[in-house]
Image 1 (cartoon, rainbow, N blue to C red):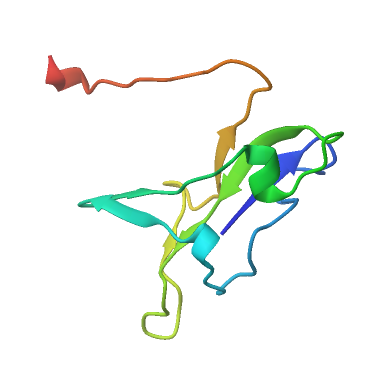
Image 2: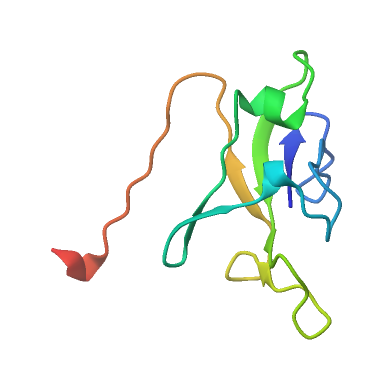
Length: 107
């Protein structure tokens, strides 16, 4: 389940340009398994085009809640933050921003 936060969103719960309704499975929002507990989602050709955002609107964040493809025991399994919140990824107008994390005990 994905959408965006724009300058017209009133807050983090005001997703705009949501790709699908909750519980709806569509090819363009389906994750691809690329390893054990590892999935990918292709957002192309651009973030603006993928979500259908007009050129005069600025995307601040992409918003996600991951869920199972089918209900389990009558409910959807959800993938959210550790505190049960929606997952947000900041979007920048230009350039590339990368954060790399190394476990403390890895060295």
